[in-house]
Length: 251
Image (cartoon, rainbow, N blue to C red; front, side, top):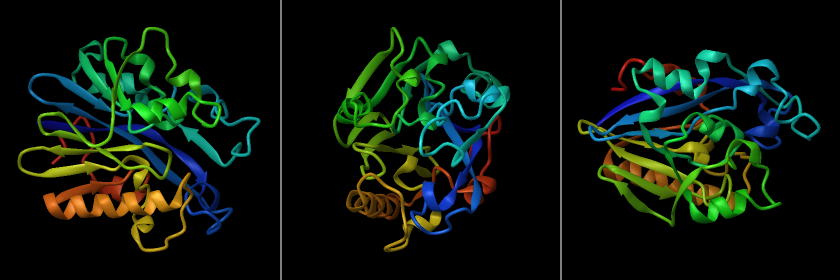
């Protein structure tokens, strides 16, 4: 199993509103947006697809007219689209068999449109929530004509060496991914853990359900210890800067 970490750009966010509720309000920080390409030897699997390319010309496309306007500002160029990131690894977008979305927020599924041949893998109940009036997920990013969905329910071994882990809290029925790369194991947390500082007890967080959020962190920490797996956080700039990015293979 080979893995490549894809750089989808970043967002400048108001930390105290978007990440650490009530703490550091007004402090603007960059948060990396990224995904992963897996080469299983039999098929290609993509984990998350970053932001919709409309943000290249209009960073405010998603949040204008909302309470988050100016609080989350995407920064990306053509090289940061999921399309170009996959091609930079020498892989045709048409060769992607599965796209696993940790969840359906704009910065995790905005590039779904580039993979018409793929099957899109999400938790069934997360999809039900995301398509309901209760959610803040931009429907333009994932309710695409002809999308082939593959719904899962809870913790499952999706493919050999790729397991999906239910980690609600950030949003209902969020999922993380445990991957066996052979020489090492990793857990792609998604937004179940955005920042390293979120992992401390009673850390300030912004979450749909704080009780579930903390429980999911403990679940991932337990799995990390059990499998000696490296936990990869979704929006931690310090960790992201320390990792090997595509087109080089993750080690």
